[in-house]
Length: 229
Image 1 (cartoon, rainbow, N blue to C red):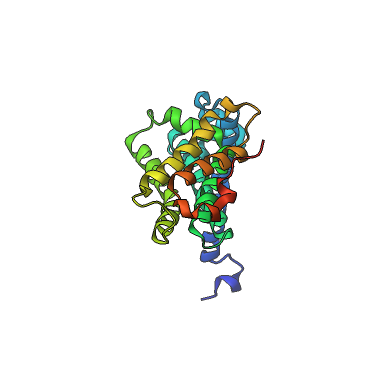
Image 2: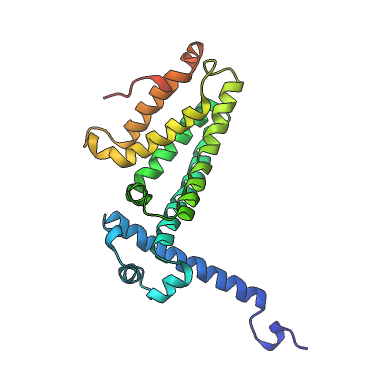
């Protein structure tokens, strides 16, 4: 029997790879369109027909990848979480092994990713009560994964004797998450006076001053000093 290469047909394995690439590309096309609509601040009122038009695909094609609008919302948020995990890990690895530096870098990356996806964050808070239990659980599980690198850095800082005794590490990383989301939700409060970089620096200083052992402050003065006006 002639092989697929000999008879000119495409090997099955290559066909599967092509289908997989096409599927990922189509999914990305729909998610990018959803993000554009979110950034316009009107995604809640958008129909699947409008999403299809924005993505340049048919409604039927969207339904072949997503069960409905709720699935699109969840996929967009999980996509942001994946980006957050990737960029936070990169930022933390860039600063080296010092756990305090890693903690600060991870928080900064977290806040900056959310800054670029403010509407996705707002949409999550507004619509979380309308999502089904399964969708909410998927978002909760995804969000918890973002805390793992921060919790590991906090644990390493504690083990190295860099933190005050009895510091609540779980509360620390939870507060970091809340503060990062706080920027996405309430950045308008600061107007033009504070940008995300100043916000990150100020919040990092406040958090570290509360948990760093006093004798360690001098070593991390660059993270603790007030942000210049």
